[in-house]
Length: 173
Image (cartoon, rainbow, N blue to C red; front, side):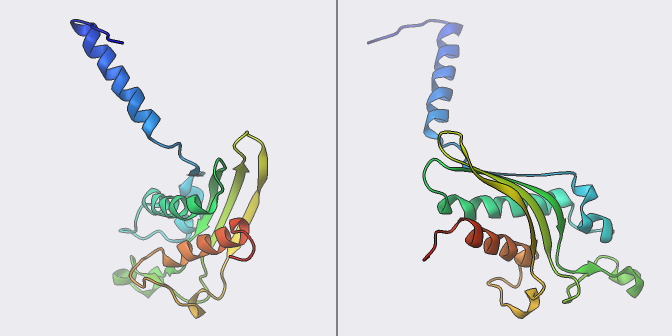
């Protein structure tokens, strides 16, 4: 079958057709991560450093990590939606040490990482398989090794990895 369009109509049709092909080729995102107001999070309130990474920046990094790690754990057709409701990253800014320490995050065992979240796991037919709220904690976070000591979010990422394995990995894996 051959279609022949001329003028602006042809360009519009071609653009729509290409957009349709591109969107059909992209798989639907099966893991989505959102967050509530990051300025109300414990970490933001408790660490008022001048040059600290903005919460939207580190939340985006945690979201990308969670999306990448959760995707292969989900059976075909299932979708996972996660919302971070509070995050308290490992460590604290201790401004009482003096002005030169105002932007240094001190990591001690008394400042463990904490992530509170809500999640919904949905089957391909839209049926809710699992949902709930979780309070992730790792009070022994300094006693466990991490694969990348240069990653400022390594403790929080490990906390999310532990949750994914416990919540979504089939028994025996």
